[in-house]
Length: 113
Image (cartoon, rainbow, N blue to C red; front, side):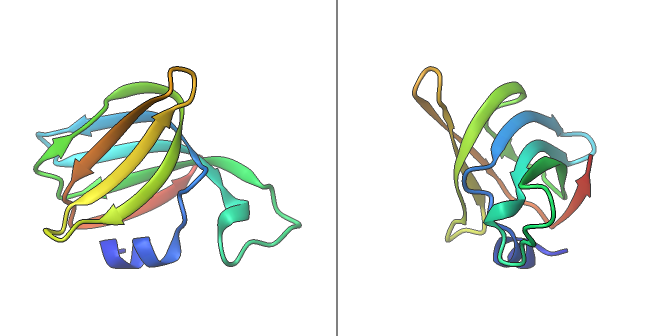
């Protein structure tokens, strides 16, 4: 799906970022997320409230931010900047430190784990 569709359809606030992998050669950014299904507009209470997903961004030729294990950092905000950059704000709850992931992508895919 394109980035605008992703931003319109998914709410990442309160989900937990577990791992970030960026491959500059392949122009791929992968985010392993403990996803809050309960925060989604179409949530059905007969389904689990949370679960692991892998969000894969493609066409990422520039990335600025964390990589590796993030120990369940809270996702505070996901937004599209004026220049078309995706900004994901996260919080390390244990150390009370804020981080920002910034990148541009052509499209995104979501996979359940």
